[in-house]
Amino acid sequence: MQQRLAQVRVVTFVVLVTNASAALFLPAVGLWREPEPARQVLGALGIALFSAAQAAVLYTLVTPWLSGRVKRWSRVALALTAVASLPLVGPVGGGWPTWSWLAACSVGVVPVLTGPLLAIGLSAATVALALAVTPGSIGDSLIITAGFGAGLAAINVLHVWLWDVLLQAEQGRAAQVQLATAEERLRFARDVHDLLGHNLSIIALKAELAERLAATDGARAGQEAAEVRRLAASTLVELRAAVYGYRQVGLREQLTAIERVLESSGVRCTVSVPDGDLPAQAVLTAVVREATTNVLRHSRAGWCTITLQAALGEVRLTVTNDGVRDAAAPDAHSQGLRGLADRLAEAGGVLHTRADGGRFTVEAVVRSPS
Image (cartoon, rainbow, N blue to C red; front, side, top):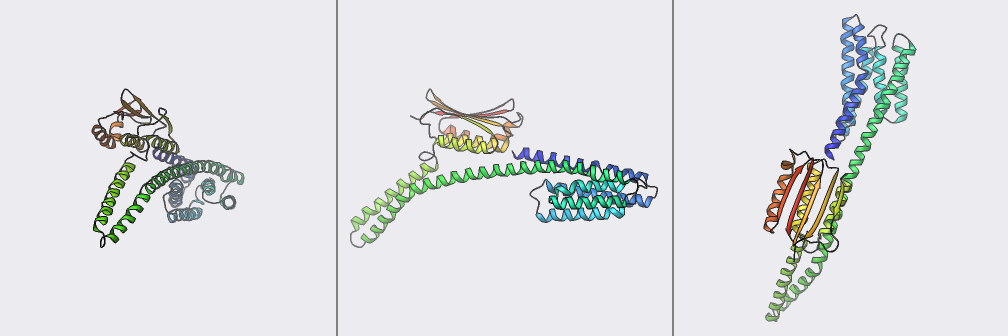
């Protein structure tokens, strides 16, 4: 998803710059028609400064991680170069409406930088100024500045709006993923609290009792201390079971959480599992977590299927997704899966991976628990 967003960002910036530069070629006609070399140089300087400032502003519009200070200074630079272009570019071209074309660029970019009322005011002032200073037909200058400028503004507003919508959607997706992660952490914290709260309370009481009996009844104090040790060991075993998925974290719950995370990330997910109890093996939950993490990090997946089958004394977990280049798939997915293959081998299982036709498949096979 991040890669797609980056691609859309580049395309949006290219469209904005292309749209803005279309009107900058026409002021160059005025430079070509200008007979005085000094005016040509000054006009070229004014056009170059305005073009650079405009490109910088458009870049800030599609770069959300830039600071507010950078964005403000880029807009100040655009305003200054627009004002400076009047004495530099205005006299250039003789009867050619050189500055009107440059004014059209200003009208085209203003609506994406300010609110609607201020944009209308600035655009009207720019049009009026162009009519006042541009030689030749007032009608031509009006059509260029107001008409062509309005067309540029419409294209810019549309593309910036689409980019903002996509960016907000991505931010919402990221928020959903964070929420799902937070919910999973809260669930695990609740399970650990329920598991440890009771036992630790008993351990504390018995330790306090043993401390009090130590001076009067050593035998009884020793029994209580032994009971404390037994409870502590039992609690540690239960805690390890909860952490590694043998007690509290079932495979069905893991699959449900992973399906929700993938869907919230824009990946269509289909989970197929048999009815009834599922094998709550930590190694399988680790496989599905690693495989789906690779879907989010290393591919441009549009869909993912997770299938669990139990037959003939073995359990087979298969995770398949699209959006993977065959040549890059093994390298991109191998690091975490290599460790999972070792864990499966220790449990008497095996891990297979394959890439074919833009699809990547992870298949884990383990013995069915008795």
